[in-house]
Amino acid sequence: MTENIEKETALVEAILFLESNPIDEGALSRISGLSKDIVKNALNNLGERYVAADSGIELSYIGGGALISPKREHWENLKERYGKKNEGKVSRAAMETLSIIAWSQPITRTEIEAIRGVSADNMIRLLLEKELIREAGKKDVPGKPTQYGTTKEFLKIFRLNSIADLPKLNESEIDRFELEGEQGNI
Image (cartoon, rainbow, N blue to C red; front, side):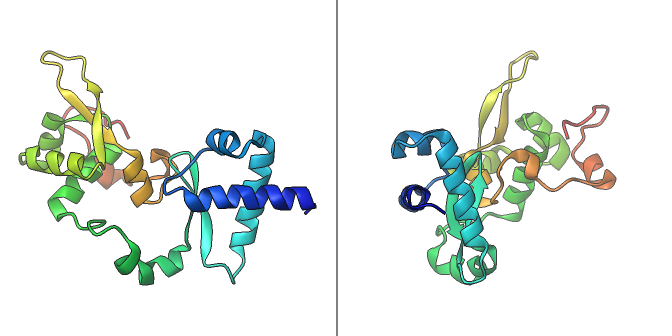
């Protein structure tokens, strides 16, 4: 590495350290005053550096942005002390509702209830409060019901770069997420 790229990599690293949320290359470029190509090279350098066994952190890509985070193998030991107080503390029913939304989005409350077989009002309210889901528009049917989808906070908590990184469902799992007589959005 040349001296310049070392300094540029250090600047990008400092910005990532100070940011608490994932930040995309464009924002890194604006904040640092560096070109996108130099930012991309700096991110590659950081990724290579953090792969080393003596590094406790890694460069993660979440929701289209980069973030410095503890390596997964260390996080299990650290999350109780450093994780968000309510992270991971959702009921089974809320997790089930969140799963349906994640794999079927955009989806309405009525569609969620048809899949779950019970009212989803409280679970939707809870997931909205935790900012794991958001209103994703209105369905073009009579009554124009609200559709729900996941948020960047969902991606961050589950350490996904995009919704496409969700595990693939097998046939029996796909059937559970389909409404009777409809093809699912999966």
